[in-house]
Image (cartoon, rainbow, N blue to C red; front, side, top):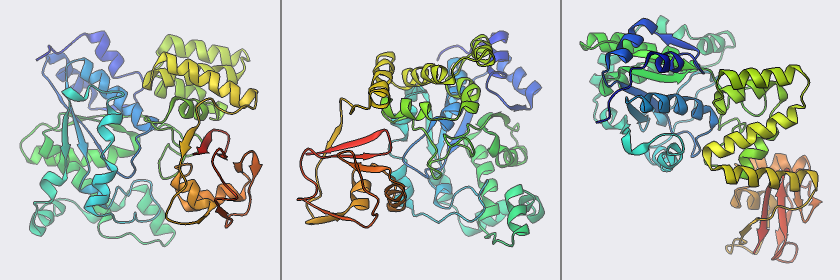
Length: 404
């Protein structure tokens, strides 16, 4: 087993750069200096097949703990993902079955490997214990909490004010997340700031189980490409860890200028002196577009390679500056199960959009082209006469496919 690194400067940087809050900082510092291997927990509910840069903020902080010699416990919410975390939600999530949740998590490890050494992490799934619980076991857990405590959260208060329903299962979620830490013998959890309430529930449960309560490191939430809401798959404002270099680069180039500094710090992991340099260049009037190029290359290099970053920049310039087609357009075959197709169905079939509703929105807004001609009629049907081999379908400025 590798020796735990207890260098005080490394520990100070670990608990400062890209960190919002540490609870309890004095306790955690003592543990880190002691040389003990800490069990560092982080959990994710499989609500989508894609992990994104917002998750990446947490994963890079986990990587720092891993590099110091600590054990990362990556928890997949195979049980909790079936009904989902109510945090920040103004209405109840739609329930999912076990298979749906499992299918969404299949590629998580491959994406996680872009940041963490997955051979050294402990992978767990909370369905390991919750699927074995009786109803009585659940009642024993929830009897330790009060309704008032669970309902004091801001999103529940907002729902009460707006006369929106709160379903019984929703306030139970933080209790389950807290119990996960008992099962995993967690010494520390690294989370986004929005998960602080949930993880605080673990501390009392751990003490009752005769263990030291876990410490908590929170990192800031990364705002999505819309510049308004936190990065989220459900909002469509995300940049996926597993997306192609050109897609990652193109999305970075589209972020609002006001997000530059936070992206350099949280997504590109710039250190203090480099952040100071970027801030100074912005203050001196440097074109934000040039800094986005630097940011895009840094992020693509982080998740792919420097060579791919250079190619992504060249591809972007070719498509956006020179108005030319990309060099490598994915080829797709028309579905054989029918002789005609709705345009919106093809957009979903070819993974150009996430859903039929999104496809209809893009079509209506004029963002969908076939051979550079806009199609705004959302219910248009296409046949092998109107769309054929060699035709190019485009959605927005960055997504292209060619018909085989």
